[in-house]
Length: 215
Image (cartoon, rainbow, N blue to C red; front, side, top):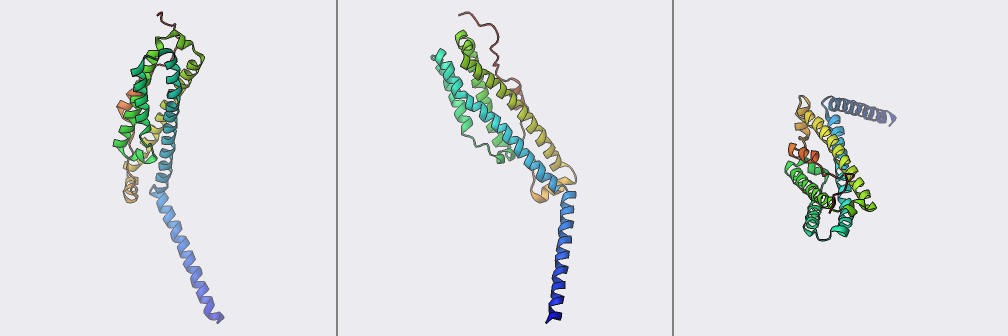
């Protein structure tokens, strides 16, 4: 009985050794072909995208208080308030999931909504410029500072996302890692366009330190 068991144990040990060697070879092969790098880069893209969304959400959260403060001094500027409300609703209607970065058309729709919001905020700031008392309001100045800081954070977050996606896309298109991309289904991700970058460069002016206009 013992002599029968021993060969079986020996065979099991041999199978375990072969399996471990196969796994080691597979792991080495995947590392060499860029698979692990794809995994790391994909997670980095998701992380940078999340930061972009966080900053856009931060801006969106500022809008209600900003609008209410301006309304306190310029309630008759109804069209501007309607534009801001519609822009915010449009932004809120788009689910900015990590999968969105794999869909160029969806990303373009998302950015169109964000640019609409930027334009509406810019018009709101033009209205505020015409009310010296509003510009002197402590709450408004605090909101202005938060908005200015948020716009800067958006620019930084977008810049980091653009660079990360650029590196990821280079990986998917370069030999030999492009072969790994085809095997495992990795494709180039959508990035911000030149038009998007122009919109960011022309961010709403939110500096109210200039002398007030006379009414």
